[in-house]
Image 1: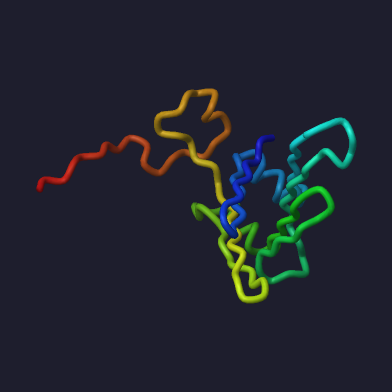
Image 2: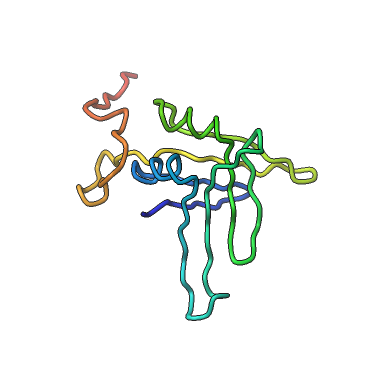
Length: 133
């Protein structure tokens, strides 16, 4: 599995390949890790899990990582539809933490290796034409 994590400004973005979306619905949890060293404290984990008792996505800082939770109904609707992502804003004092969970699309100019197990890109087969001035 290779769930992608992007942290930027005050946002968390997770991108999942097909098998990861299937696992999330079947098992209820996806976990990835970044290993910085040999000790347990040297492992950063990022986890996405389906949570039955919440109504909107939420994220929390955990020891050695991040936990993002998504409501059961939202996860199911997203996984079984053409919806690209689930997006919400979590209020943290006077600011918002943006949370985005999305399907990982094939790169239009990517290699076969890069595009393994991705979702078909909605722009596949189209060409860009420059607009006349």
